[in-house]
Image (cartoon, rainbow over the protein chains, first blue to last red):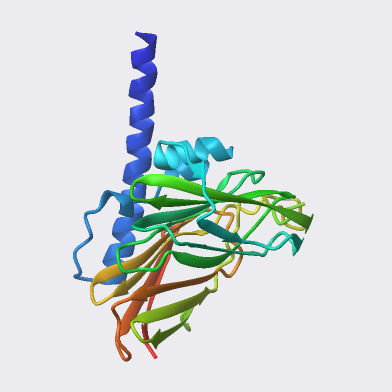
Length: 165
Length: 103
């Protein structure tokens, strides 16, 4: 009984988050794309829940629902030492086939998930961006290839944290 | 107001390389201002790139993306002179859209 109760609440919360994301998306679509019909793909939704998770493993679970295995085919390019944690250039490339998404996690940030990118067919699995890092910790890149998850991890030493202070 | 989005898209053979720079505070909600009050979170959540009606790239961002975010990616199937449509929406519902010609 108790179990049922929690599942129901969780579902409600999830639904709530989903509709908020939908409204946000709807706004963007209406203002941004005019008459172009929305793509119905489920993965176009903003993964609100995953971004709220505190730890890396929880965020990975919330985003993908499965665990990743380390792979040397995922190349994570990040500096050894970041002078300024507010701007850490991080890039990832992979030779894996059929990549559908790439995500970045910073393990010691207040919320581990930093960015998640959807890669449609025809787009190359190579991304460069800049992230904030609270302190010295591991940066994890996860590549979803043919439905499986592959990861690469690198420790970045942060001299000055980028999450307030 | 000038657009917050600056994009350079260059076609090289079949592949188009896109570099985008967006002006946005990307406040995480963890930083305090000089008065010790917390600056509320304000960050871009979704950034979409469209080429001829098809989404070629979709970014879901959290507050951990740096201020004035930069992004680089490449996609196939576009030609010189094609238009690339870029738009973002942040957690306050603000949006901005721009189009860029592929060079």
